[in-house]
Length: 188
Image (cartoon, rainbow, N blue to C red; front, side):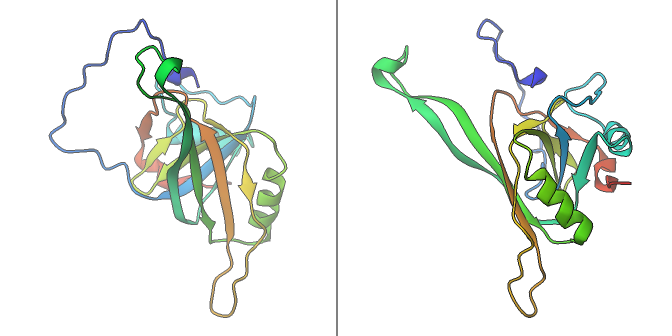
């Protein structure tokens, strides 16, 4: 991603301690995808606005999925080097892998077919949104290979769902953007 490039010659950041912490949210409630190499214009910030997403969704460059439950981001692991493999002799972490996973609970045949088709792409760009209207993925999205299940039917009284997961490698800073209008994103 363009905003996740690390430069060892850059000065160290000088962050101040905020009076209150930012509530980024705890749950992933929405995900958006775009074909790798697709055109998505983001103006003057590290995170797209809701209007920029809406423009891309309306022009069929991007698609968004709502109705996600149990959605979260977890760390999957990393490559660790230590001892003689590092300059300091200490432990260094590289290629940290994360996973976005959850269940799409509000489904119909259109959503099921869309998930089946997305499952065939080897690489897509993905953004995810939390319940407090924060978007992660920066200006270009995470490079993921989407994995969707077929409709899962657990039995009487249990609503059907489609489970999914997307793995990606962290490449540096993970900027979060806030826009109150993220909650209104939907395919039109």
